Each structure stands twice: as C-alpha cells, then as structure tokens.
Amino acid sequence: MTEGTGRSSDDGSPPLTPPDRSRTAAWHALPADNVAGQLGSPEEGLSDAEVARRRDIFGGENALPPKRRPPTVIEVFLRQFMSPLIYVLLAAGGIIAILFSDLTDAIFIFIVVLTNAVVGTSRR
Image (cartoon, rainbow, N blue to C red; front, side, top):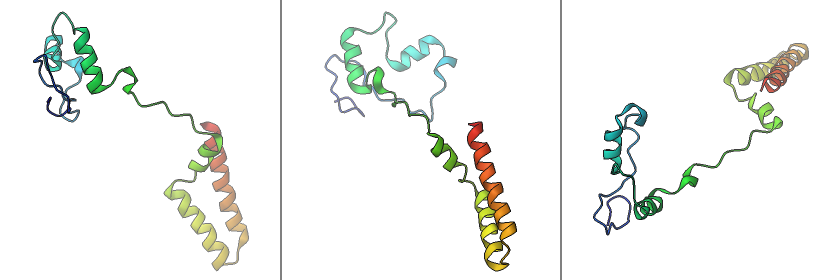
C-alpha cells in the first residue's frame, strides 16, 4: 500500500502523498528539475498509467472547489450590520430611547446606521 493514500503501487513507483502546504516553497520559485524530482516525475513525462494512478489519488481537474454564487443584494445589505461599531450605535440608540425617552436622537442614530448600510450596499 502506498503510504498516506490507501492505494497500492504495483509498478514500484514511489509512494505519492499530497504535499504539506505549510512547509513547501512556491513551485514557481524552484528549479524545474527540483520540482520534477519532488513530484516523482521523469523528464520524458508521465505514462498514461501513472497519470490515471495520480488522478485516482489526487483527483482530476475537477478537484477545485466549486465557484460560489455572488451574494444577493439583500445579503450584501445585511452584511453591512455585521460590525461592532454598528452594534455600539444601535445599542446607544436603544439606550437613549429607553432611558432618556428622547426619540429624536435615537431616530437620528438609526437613520445614520440605515444610510450607512444603503451606501455600503450600493458601493458593492
């Protein structure tokens, strides 16, 4: 069995394991022969059997995560309220309205928060 993959290697090729991304250098910064050696790739390229074997282990070109859909306008608008400063302003508006019975300041704070959300949504 090939270590780390659960696959057996019948042709005697070295075991393949996914690279540890925390300790690997950027592939483009390494000399080509070093990269080929690390990947166990001969100069003449991989045989069809080796390509199929590696696809079984690592996945094909569809191994990338699917693209996410862009957020809707409502989602962008609601994200505008996910800020500690907004929470402080909303709490201040509520405290002012409850403790001081002064709706003018509380309404003004809520209008400013809503205006900020509308402007932030329109900019995205």
